Amino acid sequence: MIQRKICVVTTTRAEYGLLKPLLSQIENDQALQLQLLVSGTHLSPEYGETYREIEKDFHITQKIPMQLQADDALSTSRAMAQLQIDVTKTLQDLQSDIVIVLGDRYEIMAVAIATMMLHTPLAHIHGGETTEGAMDEAIRHSITKMAHLHFPATKEYAQRVIQLGEDPKRVFQVGALGVENIQTLKLLDKNTFEKSIGVKLQKRNILVTYHPETLSSQTPKEEFCELLSALKELDETLIIFTKANADSHGRVINSMIDEYVSTNSNSVVFSSLGQLRYLSALQFVDAVVGNSSSGIIEVPSFHKATINIGERQKGRTQAQSIINTPCKKEAIREAIQMSYSEKFQKVLKGSQNPYKSENTSFQIKEVLKNSVLTNILKKSFYTFEC
Image 1 (cartoon, rainbow, N blue to C red):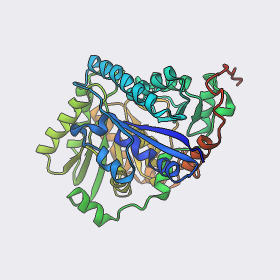
Image 2: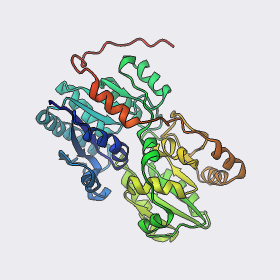
Image 3: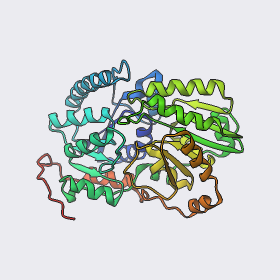
């Protein structure tokens, strides 16, 4: 039997956690052959060499180092160019039937361009979303135009993909992989989780993940100072930091986290919690603070508060459990206080996650398996009617 070769690309810890159930679906289907490309921060000691975690679960077909010498714009652009060259060579050797990517990072943009130039069909997960405070917005929509199969998480996002001219027959609203993980993964109990992070939970606990706002008028350092100042005023609270990703100026934020943790005994930091510990943490913390997409997509399933800071996630569909606040010390402090209020606790109990669906990874796998790929590269612009 001739197997259809499905190439999946992962470049970050968070993205791999989302893709993991889909990788299992592909690997366990005898009609499919999984090709797994690993690049980006997975291969970086600075970000925890998370490829080692992947190797425990799957065979990595190819590791493609990303030569990111610094986190400024020039270095990032050069790294993207080199990654495109290296991915092109790898895909040419693999002769994949279709490549699948998730999200909107600049590394994924380089992969998408490589597939386009090689005339290799591309499938895209999490298209149609909006994040007005980050350059990811433009990258995401650009990948949509280069892709041939689309897996948006909600009805609104599916409509936006179609609005961009994509054929509705190639758009499959499947929900979010991250929410499926919550439904299927056996999470750690409190005692096991505490042992895994090396510290006891306190009366109050919050999880902080903050990334640079790549289109902000303020510097990431100025913005993050506001957040740290607000956190410093919290009493009887354990603060669990996960470090920023490899965006421009992400190293500035990570250095500030290290300095804060070194002088505040009620805080701990991790380059990467990994999927299991991260989702387990969401059971026990009172709120997630920062500007990560996880605060919008996964956290609402736990009926916990998300303090969403700034405009990085502006435009995304949100649950009632999310409190939006500007990146100012007093505003952040007031938002955290609000999350503990009796009124907001009632809101949390009744909130629903708009990203929830059933069997997301299976749905994606079935489309990848059964879609006719002959002539799929030819696309006509579909005129969207409101």
